[in-house]
Length: 297
Image (cartoon, rainbow, N blue to C red):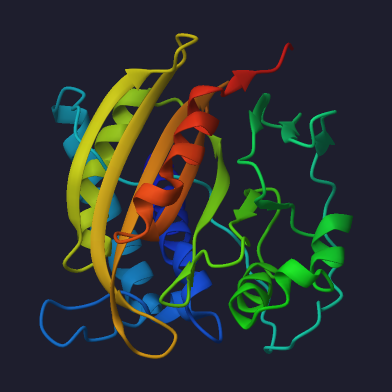
């Protein structure tokens, strides 16, 4: 039963990691993003999912039983999504979504706060970014927004529409003019896992072990378990790897993840941009993570 749960966690972890690349291609590009050291050879994501879920999950779960918590970095485990097969279009496909149990609240100063009643937390989104919940009204409206009209943004909207909103809680896209570096749209996504009996340190250690196995040539830059300014424990993981842009150019991607444990569920907040552009936008993500709050039960 434990191995089965770990397989779900690892599959969703890899899926989330590949999903973050969706903002760089013309037709769900994140499905062809990982690269080999030479020639940036594309890798079949289905192969990666199978490899990680079947051959890594069991080994990692056994390793965790025999090792103390480690303070090194990686992606964060989450529940396995159940995507619906959808052919590419430039308009939203009608899908019946479950209620998300969440709200986007606009404050008097125009800032947006996301409240996840299911997960039991709230975050403030970066200023002037587009916050979207799959299947909610703002997702349907986003297709006709002027700021979302560039093909890069349309591709991002298309990529996320078949995902399960119970798992993929929120997407935040940097739609500001001039913020597309080499065709890549900087993005943040929030993924909530199934319940688990593991600790933050155990989930964090598993992430550190499996991330380099899921993305060839990926390098973990740093990782640590620390606290927000309000004292909330959080695991921070920073990594980089080579990929291809929508037009086939080589780009270096930068990813920073924050892992929280809330009521026996992991919440992974993932920020992805290019290495060349990260200094322009990473402060918004850091502030969002530091201002993370739990909701009163």
